[in-house]
Length: 76
Image (tube, rainbow, N blue to C red; front, top):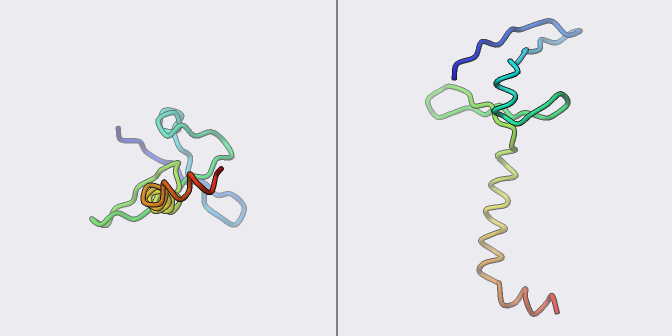
């Protein structure tokens, strides 16, 4: 999918108008936060999920898997 974004003035800033179809694919609505990250090839990626949160969760899942028995005992 290729979508054109229209830039518009919003006060002292510039905003991008995202087409309804693109928002549906992102599962985003008005007021949601979107994340723009730079890709290794010099482009950009727009996502609805926080990449830092995903990285933090991966670390936490590894910790929980490694210490599964200790965490089970602590939960008793």
